[in-house]
Image 1: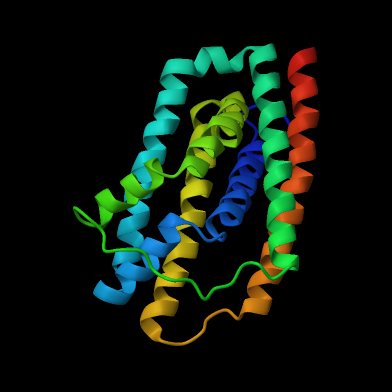
Image 2: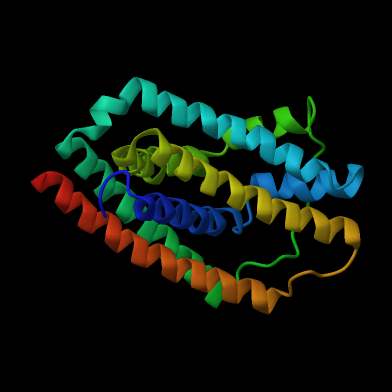
Length: 218
């Protein structure tokens, strides 16, 4: 796809959205806090927690773009990051499929402790304190920034917009499920969705690795 083409922007947004869903759907610290806070204080806690999470991620994106933008555009650097990101995506996709297939994940999750300093701050701090989140941004996130910069600022906005929208959609759904007092998703459907997402990540991993070869040659 040509740089700055509408097709590339749509592709970046769509894949970012799906990758974001794959990560958000797996049980983790932010999900636990979301369950706890929406049960205690209402649905609004879910989007506020995601707001804090999104602010932390915006800081990472800005830091990568401003501090490392030109560096990330260099062929060997982009290729290396793309390769690492592809390998991490493959590992993540395999782990998601395996956990869902072996029924090791469930929507029946216990909430974490009450948020300290308000939901926005709690969303940011919960993200920053999560080693998995840091690893994701050091590999997949950096790969996406390098990739989306091929389309300039519109590409970067497409990536970030898709990523944040996935978090907002999923955690809002979970918040609604908690406050409504009824099951929105059953465990079987949830695990099926995880398997689909995991398969998508493995396919995207192959694309990232293939793109890495292109960066080396370009």
